Image (cartoon, rainbow, N blue to C red; front, side, top):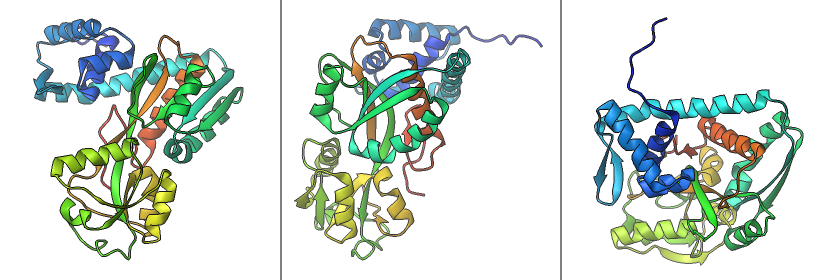
Length: 320
């Protein structure tokens, strides 16, 4: 076998490259990977110089892939994913892991994601005890600060001193209605038309409500709120009963759309990306079992057909 003559590169450079492409920011990529921003800049300058390609360009305040960068990104994400899987294999071959993990999760993740992941993961790692707390926002951050939780999976966009967030995956926010709703048979719906209908919304300052607010500001309209409900599954049930339209994560409504208990509304401005973050205390080193669990989450999301989007790949948000 003859060695290929390739541009010199390192795995770290590819990790940084994928992180900047994913976040659109050198600063956020550095935060995600727990390194300083100058380290990311130096690594990518070296990568671009050695490859002879311009991989990024600034569009407004966002760092975007160039045409060459997009071509490279398709392969770089595969290499990064394989590197993570290889590292997991190294750790698994060292022998069975043991210990305890305390996880905090919001209701959507706790009800629609964790059960699927943990069922398989606990069979593979029977000596690891898992404690799960289903809650929201401030309560989970307080538990994290007091070492009652090791990590949190949340959609909350709030940041706090002493905590580090890492983008892990994304869902999509979908407008839905009961099959009997007048808009259920419409092929295309303007946001103005949607604003005339009764809407069941989550309260501020939830991440979903904030995202809806961004779309409302963009189109200069306000949805007609008739009810605020703090629980997404409860909103879904009110929507199925015909109380009003709702905008919910795809994971919350996927089964009901498939079983024709809810209808996806093709509304301008939607679907919207709904990101999820892994949060842990700054400076805390993730244990082997925590890192293996994170890899398992990413793998399950990649293999799932429920609409979750690992942020290292491109997956259509539109309902199948």
